[in-house]
Image (cartoon, rainbow, N blue to C red; front, side, top):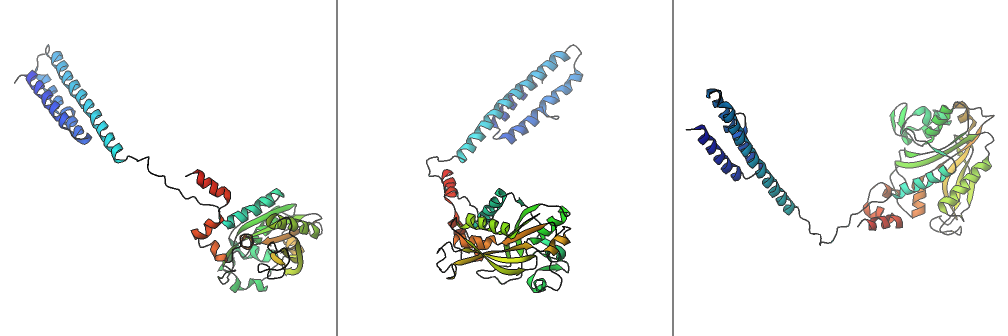
Length: 356
């Protein structure tokens, strides 16, 4: 059979095979069959060696024309198959734009997070620095550096989560204060707040939890007086509970402050007349505070004759419960959506509606 006739038959059969290819994989198989290393068109070149020298250029040109013809038909078929595949995909993934939209539920800030951020913003505005520390702490910084010797009742193993003899889950954020004072190497001023989680062995009930949050503050500089502490606490009470609020200082005892005071705020519900929130007393306890004990300053390398300071500690959990009327502290940690949705602000709801 003449090679020209062979070429013609190859082109005719390739045309049939190309048009019968139902998908892109089948078309690839056809391409390999004719144009691959062992394909029909490639096989035509094997006859080149048997031809006279003068016939080889013409023969080679005809083989190239066959190759180009098949490549062209494969490319055209490839385009058709890709269009068909895309149309099927679009049909399968079609969206009925006339259907009503689905409302996407958005979260909102947790009431405890709101309270903590409100307190942080307040103190940042007063020039305080926010300092964080370790939740797993050394016994020295959690107790000894804060004037709590080994024999102190607050060191009782039943009150703390000890991991090793000298390592425990911090029982307050005061270790951050001790570490900060130590880093200052006896040079003031220091003006910080220390927010974070703390851990104590306690029964879980409506008002107690083994894990809760604290925000403690510390100011150390020259000529810091009790009046500076009182002025700061008055400002905090008014900012958190309303401009009409007043505070009351009651003598107390904390190992790391001397003198020490408990701080009450006039009841924001009854205005001091007596109600269920203030237990008919007209006052609500909100935090403990006092002047930094000289021993704490001296252990951190500060000259207690030159430097004085005040410290305070508040529980954002308790403040949030008072502000929002929450009766059970466990609601903060159970992640009940029904509870959390009650505290969406007007801004949150507006943002959510804007996204519908």
